[in-house]
Length: 85
Image (cartoon, rainbow, N blue to C red):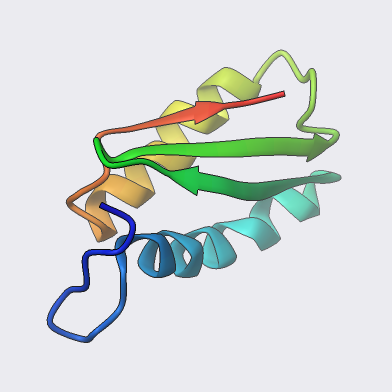
């Protein structure tokens, strides 16, 4: 799926990366960061949370309610966002 291009010629992975780049400053304001690892053929986005976000009790909420919701809204192919170590 990450190689499938939309009408603008951008792949799913490129569009996911663009949305993550928009989210990143909010995480960095709290001392954290996010790294895109992969987007698989089922639309599962794998990310690594860094800094203050790594091990933060609110990280799961940030991941699902912030990152996943934004990605699904902007990249309809996204089905889920999971954190990897």
